[in-house]
Amino acid sequence: MLSVRRRILLGSALALPALLNHPARAKSFPSRPVRLVVPFTPGGATDSSARVIADFLSQRYSTPVIVENRPGASGGIGGEYVARSAPDGHTWLIAAAYPLATGPLLNGKMPYDPQRDLAPVSLVFSTDHVMTVNKTVKARDLNSFIAEAQAGRGPLRYGSPGIGTAHHLIGEMLQLRTGLDLVHIPYRGSAAAVTDQLAGTIELMFDQLQTSLPHIRSGSVRAVAVTGAKRNANLPDVPTIAEILPGFEAQSWNGIAVPAGTPAALVEKISADIGDALNDPASKAKLVPLGADYAASTPAEMGTMMRAEVERWAPVIRAANISMT
Image (cartoon, rainbow, N blue to C red; front, side):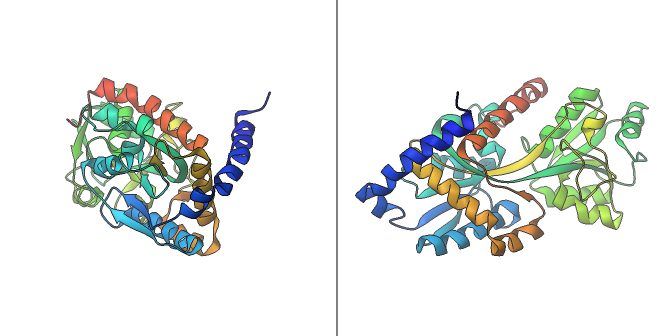
């Protein structure tokens, strides 16, 4: 029996010649500029990654790939725009978990369903989060943090860029696993939360690794644990949460999707092109400083990630009664 991976590759190999040999489709893609929609404001890893991919593919296609920022609703506005676009390969979404997977769990009024209305194309990057504490907390590892929190010092406050973000959900997962009294303080973006952590207004954060590293290295905050399945090479002496709480794993990730109904062979072609963009030496030179782990995937692998995120966070969201409506 063929493996799932081999069946995917065989199906793609059979379908791609039909796509390329179809006169209308061969001439039509891309028949006009491609829109790569970023559902966030300019700046940050998602936007920067999109611009590197767009630069590479604009040259390959001899047609502009235009990065278009459509922020709002935690990425839902850009996500809906792409989900409602024509399934012809000319409109892409690069986004994180909320617009691509967990949105309906957090917002019962979300105007589209990522699993139904979007077709996965390729993962782009993933990044660990790191649990940091400021100088008001004495703990130097997760065990001593748990002991300190349980010793009756009162609730500990953690900040996030907003309700439903990975930063928020990781804190809720830790609270559920340990029974600690943690209070979530949502901000409008990570920068404001970091400022308050440094000032002592909030005690801890579960921020992305690349954002936290400068403050860890300067001694302004202390790393207690990382959230990935294994220790991070940037902080090799900092244990994972899973070393204390087996099975605890969480990362932020970004991927690219297109409207559902886009021909499968075209999705495969775009996925391969994105892989070439991420593996290009000039692109890598621009991506490495962003601090994330860049790796393309097949559409099937990204679809698996989308479903896994729903399965990972649904129990946490229900138990914590998190809602964005």
